[in-house]
Length: 258
Image (cartoon, rainbow, N blue to C red):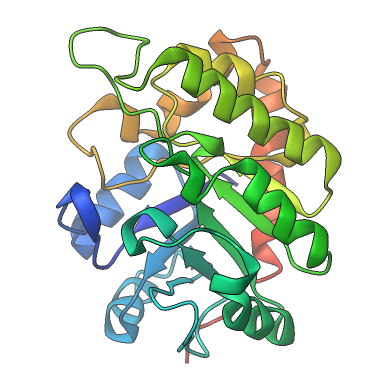
């Protein structure tokens, strides 16, 4: 079973200005990529119900935009935090109420990690929270650095290479030291980023695409993420093991939305 651990089916805020996919686009994407387990990010219960009707396995991740005053619905199996868009630093003081709700309800925390303003949400900030909340699972979206593609320069990102290296290396060191933290791979257009992630503990990796952001480019393909990791040294069997991480981790939380 292949899993995509990072897709948006609802509002996408901030600088992306990308429309969420229709149900038909979602189904076409699932068939094309041969994916049967999804990690959808949503804000509207109505949207979640429409996508749940596809019959595919969904593990709903609620985007909590006000972590000091959370309103996490009962349908959520995880919570997304995006400090860059909501403009706060990922510290205990700024997200404690959300973490306490997550702890009480056994929800995992999905954190957007950033390179535009790294000090808002980088690996060591995730590590501070994960060290205190050892009973919560944290997933670092983008593995420390978003690193979007540099147009016309395959393998490069517009983010300064040394910064990508610093942030992704820091994220990998976090998962080496903390068993309750995972890395999510999107977006792997940067060769520097892909090479560092390919050397991370395989048991701590989850493959994601950020679909439909960048859906017009190859980078939103699950197959692209797989191929990048193999090009950087992983074997096909390693990719299967990474998908199994997602299946084992997420399937425990997959439940029918009522």
